[in-house]
Amino acid sequence: MSSDVSAQTAKFLWDTAIVYLQPKLTPHPDDNMVRDLPIDDGDWSLDWPREYAEQNGFDEGDLPDWPKGWPVTLRNYGRWLEMGPNVAVPLAAS
Image (cartoon, rainbow, N blue to C red; front, side, top):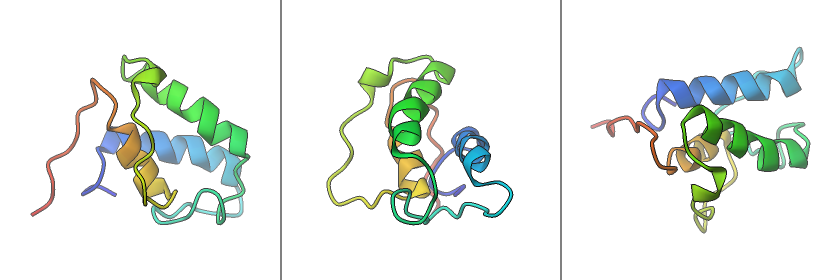
C-alpha cells in the first residue's frame, strides 16, 4: 500500500484490523471490508475514522463523503482517511 497511503496510515489500518482478524487471517489491501473481512459494521464505520482523526489532529467530521464508485477495500479506506486535513499524503509513485 506504500504507493497509495503513508506508512502511518498503513500501520493504523494494520493495527486496527488485525485485532478483528487474528489468528486466522491477514488482511490484504484489496480485501472488501464488507464482504471479505469479518469486521463488525459498527467498528470500522464509526470507531476507526474517529480514532484516525484523533491521531492526526482533526475532527472526524472533516472527512469528506466516501467517493462514488470506490469499492470499500482496505486500500481505498486508507486513501479516504488521508483525505482528512492535517494528514501527510505520500507522493504518487511514478
